[in-house]
Image 1: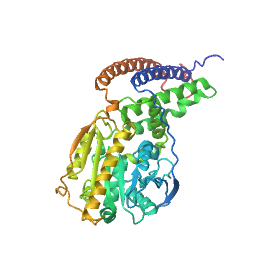
Image 2 (image 1 turned 180 degrees about the horizontal axis):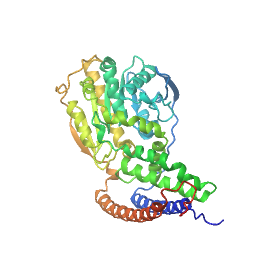
Image 3 (image 1 turned 45 degrees about the vertical axis):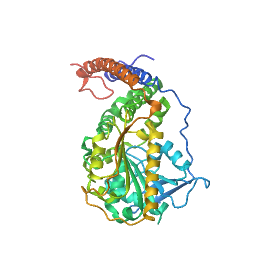
Image 4 (image 1 turned 135 degrees about the vertical axis):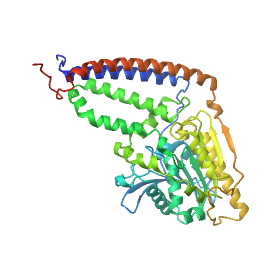
Length: 433
């Protein structure tokens, strides 16, 4: 078949050439980044004890999973651990931690937040922290009514817990025995780097029909586009989710979870992430065993966000994980699980000391109701290759710079061809008079 030499065809060809260069560059960077992170044989499948749905007031259907402990390890009176995932994630993001929690004898409840995973989307104007707090209450009411519970929330899931505290302070004060805020923020999320999805979404809508039309019947081009998309997904997932080397299969697992989130859902949550302010709600958790944990290299919710939570929640145990990014529960699952189990143990010992679960009054923000918390910086020793990482990061920066130069060179070629034909209609070659 003769090559398509129309302006659109030439542009498409150059675009595919650009894609090939970008894909190759990204593949090279990623492969070298993972050179010291071999596959571990870890599986990414988990079968919960039960699956159910919770229908909330506006009719949105929430997917819920429950892990029941083996009777041999279960302990009467232990709290149910309710886990809330973050933005563009799902219950799958907690696969490693949930396994260990249930093995330790805890009953674990996980749910997909509206618009994520297997839950329904709900109306666009329902993507607010207050609404998510109500969703969490509905999940608690359905899965552990009248029972003590512990809350664990990552990123937007931590904000959801704050929304619950603002909406239902009595419930939290009377029945919540522990709370973990993992890589999250109480406010000021205007600095969150989530604008990328919005930008890509708008760009795709603008050029999608124009760019894809010439690909009809060209499976080779389609496959190349798919490869480029996967390489780009892996690149940006690693950049904004991890910091230390991770196995390629884990990177792909995380990318698949993130990219499964519909674009309209990604966009719908941007405003609430940017504008929410739940700092006052933190007062409800005063007097409750609290854990605040984050990675020192988290680009989505940098350590200053956790510092602010600790400032407003005196006595919280604050753990900084060296060389961890935003998806800390996937990057360092054993460390995160150990800290959650330690939090639960402290909560149980405290309950035993005071003779059971007692009602607590919310303490105003800024008071010092608790003073036993501490700040620790820890590292997963199994992955502690600091010198090697620094060398890898230096090489990676050089590789990215070279890749960027190649991409920009191709982009200039695209612009040089696109310039003279910008007034041409898609699929039609402009005719000079």
